[in-house]
Image (cartoon, rainbow, N blue to C red):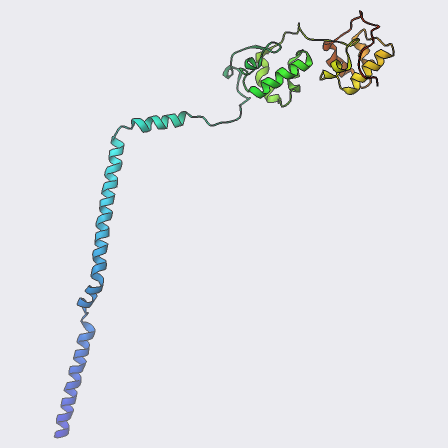
Length: 245
């Protein structure tokens, strides 16, 4: 009897323990979880509210900017759009887009030459300097002999150039000294010395073809030199100054 009573009591106690365990397992501890998550949830809520405020403020700001007249910004943007970047001259422009002017090449100074499209101070000085060495230009193509002159630059200005060749400075080949001869771009050291040596030997230059007596002077060189040479006969027997080769 006693054993049956103890068995019933043990069984009842076991059921109660199992019931208590089930209660603890099935019922969540909400109060403990709230203590951990509550500050985080509150912070997230405040962040959402602040973000909403920023979005509204940003929207109102840009809306007011669109509706407000921008006199200063408009002028600033206009000035920037009108500003052109630095670039090399475009030599392919048509003649109508260039300056409608004509320059006389043998009379123009550096300022006149700078009116030509694509000619700056450097090329203007170079053109004038080479003109002085030559004694004047006798053809437009001689501009291509100027240091740094390209065919594109030449083509851009050639239609705006005219030539007056009446005042070309010439060299008397029968009397000029070595220094005068050597100064000309078409007469190098060898040609200058040969001219003086031939004159010293009694040879007189009387016509352009006599230039072919000079060694290294071919037909092309003769044709280039002829506009700058004069053959005067009044000082045939004068002995020129200069080195004798």
